[in-house]
Image 1 (cartoon, rainbow, N blue to C red):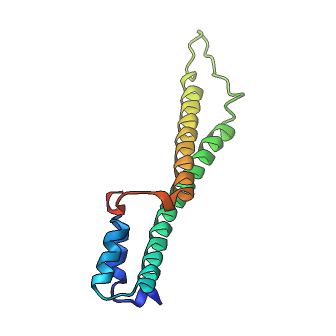
Image 2 (cartoon, helix red, strand yellow):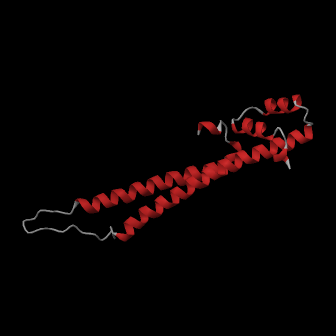
Image 3 (cartoon, rainbow, N blue to C red):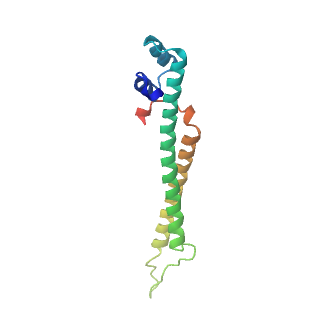
Length: 137
């Protein structure tokens, strides 16, 4: 297995830090790893990087889906399309703010959820093309 290779951990760190492919192969060549084996080590390390990025994307996707579901749940549970404010004897409208606040809360949850869902989908789909160190995330 490639993960048992002595240089794998170092190569994995270099891939996670997004060092250049040439620098990684130069290091492997200096340490006496032949080209075919170096390709296998690099491919395994790159697959690990993509797996980590897709895992983060899946987490964002689940958070986004949960937030959208919560926003829709608030809207449906409180029946905001039919909720009327109660009027008191002298015309003071005591609960007019409650439906508005619940609607705002529902909208904010849905907007946040859509943002996280789109972010998660883009991280899942474009993980192999993502640049930059994972330590900076």
